[in-house]
Image (cartoon, rainbow, N blue to C red; front, side, top):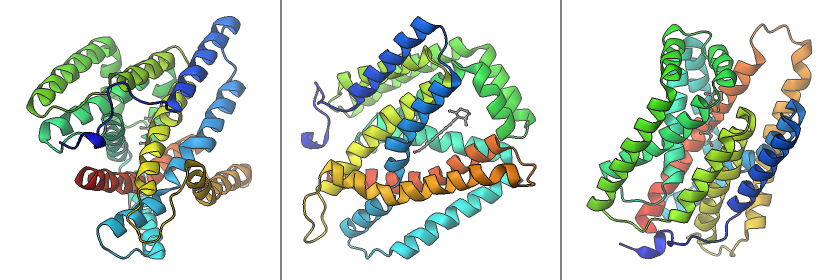
Length: 323
Ligand SMILES: CC1=C(/C=C/C(C)=C/C=C/C(C)=C/C=O)C(C)(C)CCC1
């Protein structure tokens, strides 16, 4: 096993410590004032989303170009954009035809994607893949099940009150702690088995940071809990992985790039995404659409997530193959 590609036992300095600090400030503030106002929640959530959440997905074209180069293939930006949009259009159509099924797909792919970044660079064995799924599932289930009053209306909006989804959610809610403890315990057991079969160097400090972020989110409203995990943990880690991937570019004559330069590269697509959202928000009051804007927001989030997951999944495979 190539140890260089695995995380060291005591981790390294990462910006996720800042996320922990932010979470602690928010929890302390909340303890002081009782509840954080919705305006504060949105300001923190939007700042995290604009600074890291969206930019981490706005690098997909650079990742795909690097992946193509490592595989010895040519890369066409226009073909990449066409494929990206096609995936979004097909998935968007299924949302309007089968909302329940589409939500199920969104949750499943998110679980896989979160697990893939939370349990990094493990061997491609079946058992390690199951562990990744279990970890991703635990993280998402923890965030959702510990914020039932906020999640339930969104789920109902998203699935247009889909009977099966709503009753599955209510059943999960009525046994939420049993479910989370059981899931956690099963995940730990599977982790042990996977570790015994193909050992890796486990970065316990990194896992501890993840646990702290989740615990802080438990004490905070859904928007901040999700923002802290999604932008303050997932997107930052994904950014770091992308940074390593692009910095060790196999493309000929590529200068070594800094993290700042990579972030700057994400700005054009981030600006397009923000302009799109602002235009929608401005136009909405004048529109005659009866569609619920909240549902559309989450559906849009899922649409941009699907092609992003594909790009990142291929990068992860490439990293496992080449280090
Ligand atoms: C938090 C939350 C939800 C789930 C969001 C998910 C699963 C987001 C995944 C995003 C990903 C994977 C982005 C990739 O970069 C629901 C179910 C909509 C309900 C309301 C609250």
